[in-house]
Image (cartoon, rainbow, N blue to C red; front, side, top):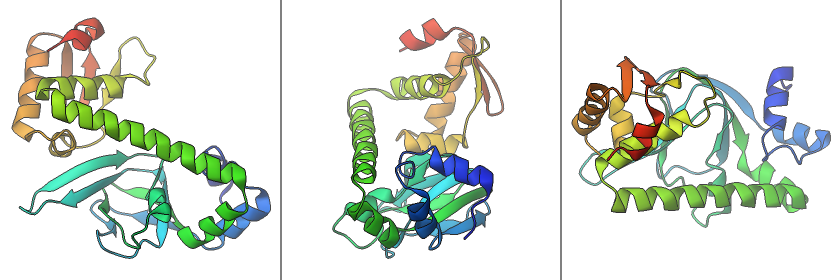
Amino acid sequence: MVLHRVHHQILRSHHLFEPLNEEQMDELMSTSQLLNVDKGSPLFRQGEPASAFYFVISGSVKIYRITPDGQEKVFDVIGERQAFAEAMMLMDTPNYVACAEAIGPTQLYQLCSHTYMQLLQNNNRLAFALLGRLSVRLHQRLNEIETLSLKNATHRVVRYLLTQMAPLHNAASSFELPMAKQLIAGHLSIQPETFSRIIRRLTDEHIISQDGRLISVLDPQRLQKFE
């Protein structure tokens, strides 16, 4: 397929594709597909053959599993310029271990795992880039396990808000929650009512203000110390 110039630049800025030369990039894209999906569209289900990984151009995707009691547990939310399911290429299992679903209108590339693995075998820089990404993911998961195991619900919510605020540089420190509170609560392993109660408490104490999904941090220092 012929890459849109902007898409080419976006992919090239990501460490999974930056080490590829133009010939290798063309080879990968020849077996890839650009998808435009609606909210709620499944990309893959747990147990399906893991033949592809994905790169989000715009929109967002939730990664989740269904627990034995029928509850949905969200493990991650993948935003624009992020890849997901690339770890499956290095796993023994031939099937996806979780589900992926668009949580809004989303444009993304579906990339052939077999083609990428062939390129990986012939490109050391590409191999190290993939290992680096998986190491980052591992440390993120370890931090999440620590938080979920040792910290209370308030700490989880505060840490989540601080994480959302971290990339901002504007004085107002305002950001929009990337998904509905039910999904955020599931990601933090708390009930939606608990999440709402903590947000309400932070609002009542004038630490933050809320307007729909828009959160404004009024007192960052108090938020960091809030328990």
